Image (tube, rainbow, N blue to C red; front, side, top):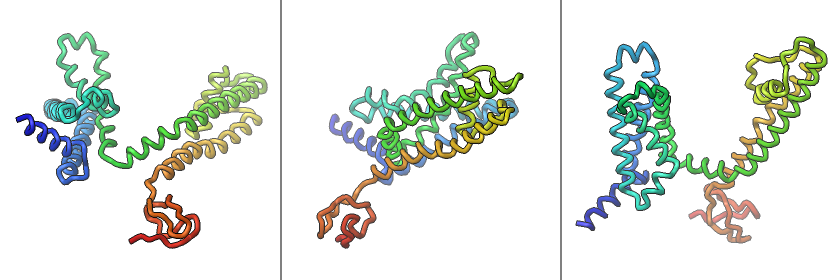
Length: 273
């Protein structure tokens, strides 16, 4: 009986956690469809007219998906050997957060704790589970993690830059404009962040010639600033791409791209057969 249970767990693990089998692919496709439908229910429920006219079907659909994802969460815990490790993992936490809000609505006296209704928004976290079903998501995660030091240095540089720009703009506008909107350095830093990121809300804008000149420089600088983190992550993704272990017969170099036909070091043809 114990052997049969182990076999069932292994089979269930293959279906739930591995997408390289027909059953695993089918499970992932069905789960992705359910995730998208459940998030659609959350979005429709946020529209007052639809919520008023279709309250009962929306509630039924919400409970259906909640129970479905609860069963899935329990099965995932059942399959893995280290249950605590999975429960504390990123997607384990997302799975739990996506089902908790619906059950919280059953707590007696929930009217008093109306602030807990904000937790219903956590159901949108279900869409993050989509990343668990794409191989490229893991590649992106690894690239972001490997680039964390460079990104932190870049963010510190940007933070320093906006403080300097904000202080300069505060000095310019405060000196040359009597009724300036740049009434403090923090407010000027807010303007610098909005301008440097090319968001451009327009709620604060310089009125003097030197201030507008500085704003133009910051706008142009923003385009180059945005490209930096993209380049960092892209370079790391390229570096993390799987390499072909085929050794060059001429120079013995063995770090080639998966689709390489010629050696990147000496140009000799690789044995791709």
